[in-house]
Image 1 (cartoon, rainbow, N blue to C red):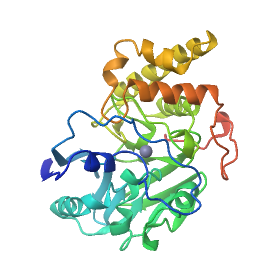
Image 2: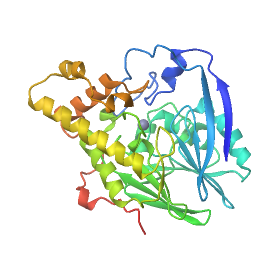
Image 3: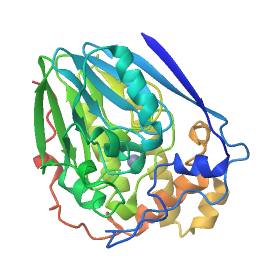
Length: 331
Ligand SMILES: [Zn+2]
């Protein structure tokens, strides 16, 4: 089942910039850390049109792909449960799409991490439904200019399950990845994973070092998920099309090879500008997109690999050895 809802952007880069995976520039208050800004050069041609596409994934689960991070929705007799809710500016479109599914109101909102393109809609959907997220998500959203109702009201350190629409929906924290507060979501009976921004399908990823993300931890998380994911699971990435284990393995290969490449260049004494000059080899150079181009990705890898596992100190999370992490997908 696919539904297309289109809207037209009124201006170019300002709208484009708002659509990126970063906090708004007017954040005030004791922000934990500033997020790395996007590439300085705007794209040659800003997108003129965005579409919100609704796709049935499997079982109870639908995927909404639009201007921000991908949304997962559980639809059934209990109502609706959303995983992430994109930008507030998109909420009307999203509400129309949800209404077209015809299955009641939103009962819960889960946030995979704090970035605005995944949580800004909390300001709309959080008014009627409790938001559930990792403790770090609430801490980071407390410094955003969100209405109070947009903050997570149920938080967890390691994992939590929501029993909804006849299945267990496992929300599992993965440490030191895209940020320090990421979760993945497994719909057990539907056999669907929502990986948030732990997975950019077919695209170079953003790793938010200034929000406690880690280059090596990001790859470790992907490998750990691959080691536990059922082979026939369908995967909603944070950005990119609906995927399978095949695309996640490709993503792991890309991360592994590009990280090894930059590690080797660093050992040989190369500076960032020389690494950027050399660029990425094929086929990974084709994974660049308007938000993360080759230079930006190589800068993330360089900074992440030269400045330690974390660029900034964690705010609260303890260091958890991989073997003790709570990730457990399979029953
Ligand atoms: Zn993100």
